[in-house]
Structures are given as C-alpha cells and as structure tokens.
Amino acid sequence: MAPHDPLRPTDAPAPSARGEATAWQSRAIDDHNESDAELVAAVVRGEQQALNSIYSRHADACFGLARRVMVERTMAEEVVQDVFVRLWRAPERFDAERGSLRSFLLAQVHGRSVDLLRAETARRNREERDARRSFIAIDDLERRVLDLAQAEAVRDALASLSAGEREAIELAYFGGHTYRDVAVMLEMPEGTVKSRIRAGLLRLRAALIEAGYTTS
Image (cartoon, rainbow, N blue to C red):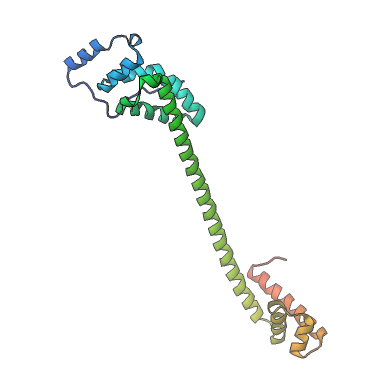
C-alpha cells in the first residue's frame, strides 16, 4: 500500500490566476495517454500536475520497495516523499535513454533507503554505546565512592581496636606478612599474634556490620 497523503512538494509553484489554472487543465489531458518521458518533460517545465501523475503511476512500487528495505512504515514514506521531491527539483537527472522512469525511481528509492537505514543503524549504535559508557561510568563512580566509604569505615574500625590488635592486623593483612613474620617483627609468640589478630578481626567485623558495610 502506498502512503496515504498525496505528494505535495514544498517548493512546487501554485497557479497565480484562474486563467492560468484553466490553461493547465487544458494541457493535463488524461495522463494515461502521456508517456513517462512526456510527463518528466512537463515537470522540467514546472508543471506540478505532471509530477502528481508520475506519483500516481509509480508511488505504489516505490513504497513497496522502501517498505521491504526500511520495514518501518514512516521511514518508508519519508524515503518515497524524498525521492519524488528530488525528481521535482532535479527532473533532468532522469535520462530516458538509460532506462525507464520506474527503474530510475526504484534505484533512487533503494539507494536512499539503504543510506537512511545505515544512518539510523549508526545512530542507534552510537546511542547504545553512549548508554553503556554512561552506565559503566556511573557504576565505576559508585564503586569508587563505596570503596572510599568502606576504606574510611575500615580506618574508623581499626582505630577502635587495641594497639596490639591493630598493629598485628595491619602487618598481616595490609602489609602482606605471615603470622610467623609478624611474630618475629613484634617479638612475641606466634600463638599470641594469632590470638590478637583473631580477636581484632572479630571486633573489626562487628564495627563494619554496625556501619552497614557487611552482613556476614
């Protein structure tokens, strides 16, 4: 099915007087008796009715092709409208010696449809990439803020421990040392170091739970 609205090129001239309109009607004999080439020649002369006749003949085929390529009806209608407006503005581009007017119009429709489809696909891809980047950026920002908040909470929780517990935990978990290394550094039995770390971790966990950063 072709677009419902009739072709109305925005820059098509309108008859300026009743006599001029009557003169056109006398020229607009049954368009079925005129060839496409004759109608295009009339378009070259600026006769809008000739363009309307061409539209009546070929719009269905053009719209059918545009719809197959574009799928979306509104975009197909846009393509057909654009092709016929281009014919109105530059009818000399049609060369009857190189093929029929319908072939010319269909080629224009196909090319325009492909261009528009590619542009639309590129636009949607850009929007999707931008949306993903935005989501990732927001997610990264939230993670950084949460990490900073957690780091601050850990520092506060560590500050609540005894000096011995805090020192042992900092050496083992933040310094990367083994229990034996920590025992040597602090000059105390390894069992004592383990007990301090275990007790400190329990108090640290309780402080973080109270701050709302862990539930396990």
